[in-house]
Image (cartoon, rainbow, N blue to C red; front, side, top):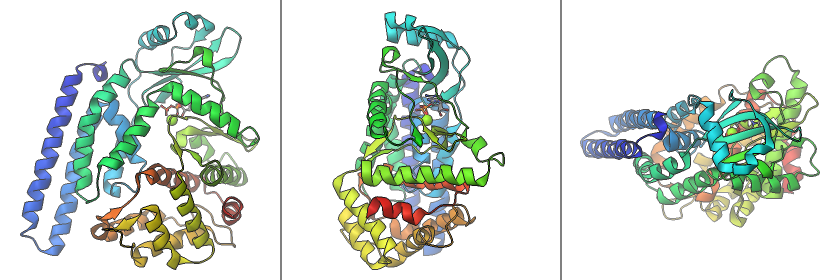
Length: 431
Ligand SMILES: Nc1ncnc2c1ncn2[C@@H]1O[C@H](COP(=O)(O)OP(=O)(O)O)[C@@H](O)[C@H]1O
Ligand SMILES: [Mg+2]
């Protein structure tokens, strides 16, 4: 399989890409000195997109670490401009399945004697995992399971790509932001490396099972330790309605509303009560039941909410509920969000976002996610207008995955067109 061969070639490809992006940006900066304000911006934007496209093409052909990072970045809507994020999302494409014999060998070499606890493993892949494949099977004791199997050597390949990836992405990032790339990269890298170790995911599942003991509307499939390792994760098999099906007309809107409310309640509870969030809102990580419950999959990416961020988010939610727009710049500064050297973010940059949240938290009529069909278009336009003024805005690294989870959940709720008492749910967990 091409993704597993010749890591040095991959490194070379990435290194030369970093070089090309760098020269091109440098060229653009020099050229900009001779341009008028207006065309300078257009030119920068065009150049930016051209470079990002080139970067993504290379990332796509490399698969492995690059693909994983691309996927990750495509969910971070706030980190890169929307044009770039859209290109990253093309990396979501599934990798071609690997011959079962190779995957089966990986299970044997990981589990040794314990391999015999399986009665059978179905050779046909059941689902694509980002760095492996999911197969269904049965244990000798009769339990139905799914086995998440890492591609052989993928962890080494990703680790080997990291340095080059840091450079390529850092150069793209520097095109539109003057803040430091290193802390942001450290945060991305930390979560990525955690995802490579399935025994950490098993630990997360155990912790989450405990936290959710008395929350029947959320179902978390248990881990089966005996047949798991750092590269193999065996779980009880719990199937549900896929997100794609859940959004169709087959199901009544009332049921979709309930699913949406559970997802939202879960997000707010995770932030303000558990202070530990499932930080991969990819819709594929959820499934639904006609009884109204929601199944949660994939605990490879979790984020603990630090004290300062917790306090900031809480004050911010209260400011929105209590109509205190003027309090927000200072709350943001205390959280580490500021312009330049600790200057507040201008109110007019905050206002449009503030009004979006105010609208969702209005008392009546209950807000329907997706009712404003131009929502994303507006967000993108807002981002474009603010781009020249946002290049020196600092964000604390700890907020990156929280932001991604909130934005991703909103996206999921919009797909369900969920209606609900959003204000009450927020009040319940914040006050
Ligand atoms: N316990 C389970 N029971 C049934 N299906 C599962 C289970 N765990 C995962 N899946 C399916 O496999 C897919 C990939 O698993 P996931 O843990 O999300 O992998 P990755 O971490 O690579 O995204 C999920 O989107 C889901 O459809
Ligand atoms: Mg997943």
